[in-house]
Image 1 (tube, rainbow, N blue to C red):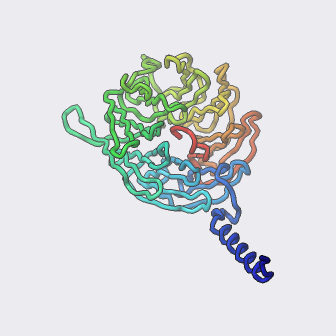
Image 2 (image 1 turned 90 degrees about the horizontal axis):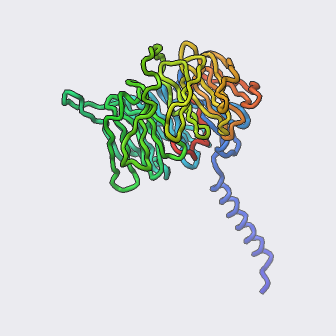
Image 3 (image 1 turned 135 degrees about the horizontal axis):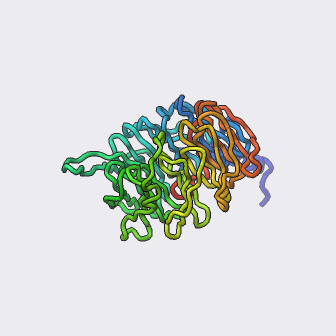
Length: 405
């Protein structure tokens, strides 16, 4: 039976209306009126103004400055597994969720008195926050931002009394597990979120004052730096029954330390083949260890006390930034020869840096110059200077797909 022309027109019009409505419903949010993915995006902490700069790493430009994050004098960022949202951990205990597609704050809570960082679980359901004040870890649902579990960092002092420890070095590892260190307690804890009833495991007497920690890229080794003594504490998460092992126990034995102006950040360590590069505490050195047995193999003299020691993604270079008062330079180490091959001067008060996902560029914060400087990592050519208010931490969305980042 033939369909009348008038009915054909009506059906066609209805189909077009449905298609248009579907397109409108499916259309993703736009930033500055332009549709984009999140793979090229990143966040720069602007510590003086409690704001962040939302940046495009390919275009090398600032897309928007977003305010309202509270105290960012020490802040870090983690991305959800779809790389749409950035969780910003603030010094005022604030946990703030930023929508990278709209460039707007999507949620904010004050969950503690002083938070130092956190992590997002392997399945993306949970965000854990490590707190200095009152101490402990709080875990929230990443979608609702509702509290899932509160884990106080309670420990027993030598006199028998109890107290709360500062929590540092919070990382995620496979199996929906969080690992973190307790500064005053000298302990490392794991929190398994894979079951309906979370499971807490405590490792005691790991060393004096673990101040920060790192996780290997495969999630196997959790290594905490020890501020109260030389050496580091290593937990093999493939064999947790073996407990915590001390490594590099005497790298500075018998030597006089320099005054420590700022603690190194072990999350900014470097791996290159079977080598690990660490910042030395209180020394103008980068330490090199053999990851097969974690023995010390070399000590590289550098410009000042290193803070961030980071490997280019291809592991051919290590880039080092330094503590005050020698924080005006960046040095590049060749991972094969262990020689400093370039010294750069991007600006005043250099600290934080981030490689683009494949390592062709590096972005460096020049805090007191109010600029982020971009370099070509092969030629060392300066490519751009971007405006930012007292920039510090730089975080790109490729971190969403890496263990511990």
